[in-house]
Every structure is written in structure tokens, then in C-alpha cells.
Length: 171
Image 1 (cartoon, one colour):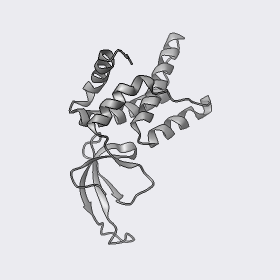
Image 2 (cartoon, rainbow, N blue to C red):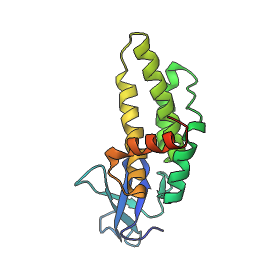
Image 3 (tube, rainbow, N blue to C red):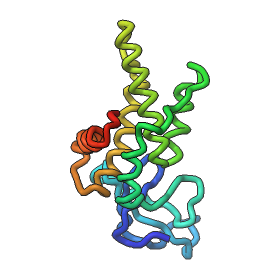
Image 4 (cartoon, rainbow, N blue to C red):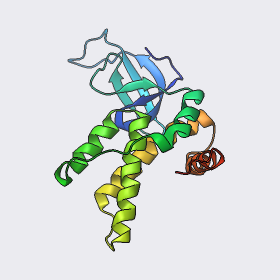
């Protein structure tokens, strides 16, 4: 169980702060069931109530700063997401994002960045679907790294590039 004030990853909402652990007084809701009251960092003003024992949506603690630094260091070796066919492209993106795993976010971003370069080089536009999933994966990855590295979210890409440059492994 997570504690009040902790930051966690909650499904597609990304980084959330646990604001409270409480019961809900509503018809049809067991009065003894505990719920987290979460506030997503990327959606100011929004709140999420979810059962503490929810096993349908990924809820996990943030990685440690050391794990974040290691992830960045290993990014060049992480394989890009393989999409079995064009028909399954969007579902592959969704499945990847649903894991709540930063390594999977890196995999999808590598695939999307490569696909973007290929499309632009052949004179095609980047698809709205690719843009949407790039934004979602970047938001999920960068928001977690932002907290762990104590830097603003918009500075995370530059931080990653700088780290990879200094280790000799450009993105």
C-alpha cells in the first residue's frame, strides 16, 4: 500500500500524488473498502479515486533516482518496439503504454522516432496517431524522470541527450 504524499504511477494518468486514503460513502459501495485519492501531475485540477486493491490498472512506485540514471545510460541498447503489422500498430502502441514500464516507453519512442524520420525522408507526413502516441509516451517517461532527477519536465530530453553525449552513446 502507498502512503499519503507519495508519488506513484497510475495507469495512463502517469505520475500521481497520493493525496488521501479513505472510504467512499455512496450507495452500492462497500463502506469498508479503501480508496486512494490521486491527483495526476499532468492534469491540474483533476482527481482520481481508485480502490487500494485495484489490480486492473498498473499502480507502481516511481523508480529510484539510481534506476532512472541507469535507464538513461541503457537507452542506446534498448530495442525499439516491433510492430507486427500496420493493422496492429495502434494496438501495439496501446499495449506498450499500458504496461506502465519506462523501458517500454523508450521502446515505443524509438520506434516512433524512427518511423517519423522514415516518413519525412520519403516525403510523407507524420500521422496523427503517431503524434498522439509520441506525446503520450514522452509525457509518461519525462514526467517520471522529471521528479526523480529534480528538473522540469521540459528539460528532461536535453538532460538525456547530454548524458548520452558524455557517455558517447547519442540517442
